[in-house]
Length: 548
Image (cartoon, rainbow, N blue to C red; front, side, top):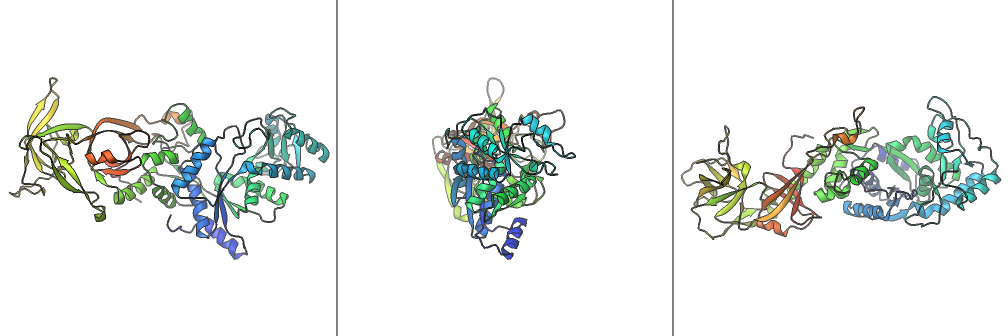
């Protein structure tokens, strides 16, 4: 992952060490397995993983599987795969559900200490009693229950004697606190649902704000690094740690989430896109999920480079998606082999070239990397060029092929267009050209200047393929701030995917394996699709005006 630039989180850790922290630095990434990770998750992974490595510490992956309703082993497996792909291999893999017995025991102790009580208020009544930002809350009529009664009710909750949602266990803190999260928050609720690891053992489940600090403390986490929406939850995090009286107390610190233009990060929205068929699954290459970025052709290093360039800050901001595209473009420019691909084929017949003959031209794999070597590209009397590389009535300063005009074939001969052949509908069927067979090096013997150079593919050796041109999923820049009276789905782009079905590729691409990346010269960077043989996904365009 390279060197990690210092940021405010490291300054916090440096100060803790200077003030006597002796424990080995220990961080964690705690996703809930209720969906696929997205690029915003990559920021949290990078911060926690790289911080642990900077201080020669430890990094845990812990599944926050305390809500059985939406969680599934499918998501557990996808999350582990994403971390392996990113190279952020955890030192240990844990599950929040494995601590359920301890969470329950700690809850019993809180009841015995007079710091928790069973409440019968409905969710609506709890919201009413909680008050507002300007008005204090009111104490629950069940707040004064005795320790004995609370212990009895809580055990009966665990034993399944009460309906779902009929009772909660609440921390007894302060209904007048200016922080709404401290107004006697619920820490256990009744939910009858099959758990992907615990089965049907439990019908009560701890809530995140209660379970998470316990899990951190048990695992020896020194710094619980999370996104900014948990900042107001920090006092509750500290209350749990202090009142359970752990000897070693983890410290929570928050960083700004990663928000990117022209996409959404909410799992709820991403799930809706998948379930309503707006996209072709969680790994649709237009999605911001890590599996989608992987399928599209992004690399782990480009994603982490993007995260680093976006920065680690305390204030939320919106990062231009063009920065992400810049990072992968810079990497692939240096590393991707060059290949020729014709997306809208126009046949060219070289009338002065021997029929049936094939010769091979040596073409560099990557001109910016001499060590990448070269390959042989087949040439024959029938070729394909791009329709856009011929103009029957060329605009001013047009430097590609035109009637009675010349153009260089990349790495091969100069050709001249002599005749246009049309079909029965008057459409151009093919071009008949002659080649200057003395111009293998591209330089005419008489010194005439031929300015245009185009790519091509031998028709006899061409590989048929489908090319997917992906673009932004949403037309709106800030999808998280849609205009009043609209829905984020109103801004789905109709041009986010263009499918080119009749493409002709040079022969070497027949050997491309899923995930192999190439620069299709003059077009952009492409990746062999992992789902569909003979399909290439555009990773990113060749050039962009974005400046860093």
